[in-house]
Image (cartoon, rainbow, N blue to C red; front, side, top):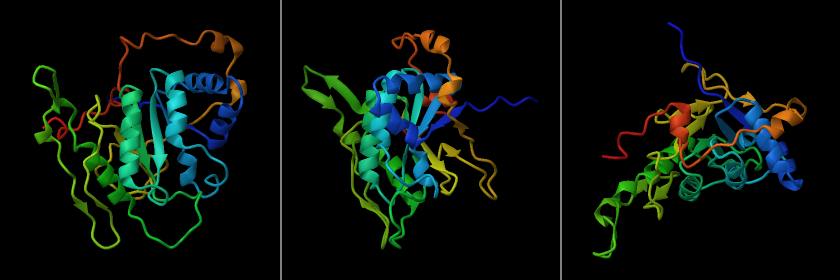
Length: 261
């Protein structure tokens, strides 16, 4: 039996992102390169997970995703975060808000360490970080919004619940809930880098992971010289009102069953 190839995810180097925002028309040219790759989704900020490439000037991945998401209205976007720099509540709220703005085309990639920060010796559990983020995304179900103007009732507040996560000594204590309802795609895609062992992830990105099979590979972004002027001029235009595929749709991932429960 022939297996269906996995959808292509392209990774954008931080240096290319920085150059794109610094030059007029840079985001449009970067979007053309992404389209030329044949990818259905873009991973932004994963350089921070690499010891060699993770240092130097970088953009916030969610800010870069907002700019690219508008230039690529039918692509998915995965933004990177690591517990050495971020708190799970802030990440959960920021990524979910971005997912609403970009019409359910957003996901998160959690790595074990952000190498752009000096080592402090402090330990952070990336698997717990990912678990808290996912739990927060589920604290306010989207279908709890009823919008009953006559009754003056916006949502069924009985379905909005705190997370009440207590990771014990050295872990996270997060009460919740989020101030943002969940996504049209159920919840944003939750991916982990290949150095994070979290069984609840939708996707594992990067290289091989010892003992647990092969992670989903990332395709390098084509060089600017590989995108011809003719391809730029003929970039496809899509009616986003009719083509409203979510990131889960693009990657062939199901909506988590617990979201609608």
